[in-house]
Length: 361
Image (cartoon, rainbow, N blue to C red):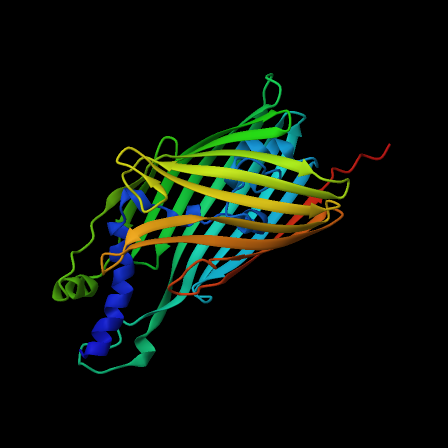
């Protein structure tokens, strides 16, 4: 077994080992990317002003702002120069004048990963026909419900989340969690709170490793992963927003969000042993409610590099949007704040309003 072959095997097995070794602090990270180019263009500052089908992800209480009977949403983006693909589909339907039901599906995956663990046969011969491929895929299924209560301006919402994570035939997990949210409109101001994984989200991992694969783990000094449970701790997001109408045609929407985590210090702007606070800000300029320009800043990072020097970074995002009657087309350019490696991600999303047809008399 030559060095190249060993490295190829390790590249495959590292995926399985890393999945098992994830800490609670960064569990289910694919669910923190966000959905919809409008929100991503505003640096994910969207839990308060969200008024479309993507509220099923951002803040389920916002589903009650959908004006039409049905709304459909789609999104596609790629990361790491197209290696990883991120897709979203959502559907929302109004149940009555005060409640809305939504369903969302999210997929984040890396496909066609070469599996070279059987490249060399039992006789030591290299056989490239023995190379197969597999995918490392994360799925999330969200069922959302929004309800307008008797208190004027107050909407409540909740999510049920089912998580499916799979790394080829090597490992897989099923997870379950709940979100709770609220929105409150007061005069020209809007306020929101989103409690993600409010009861903690549990992923139960199981592994299916062949004897040959286990031997490779032992030969390379790696621990054989064991079945276990991965826990995602609660996260609280607070937001406030206001829309300014300068003229009948020109408007500006501004939103500020604050992500609060309680799992120890993180490399964010405000951190302590009790909580870490990560602020982000988004703006949306609109013209005739048809053309939109967006910008935002967030993902503040504060850390010490290898030389002991304090480093502070942030991520600005930009985006545009067009509304043509009941169709919304949005685009965002993200990851432009990465100072070490410029990884640009293009995000495209589509929303369509669908009215319920009146029955013929």
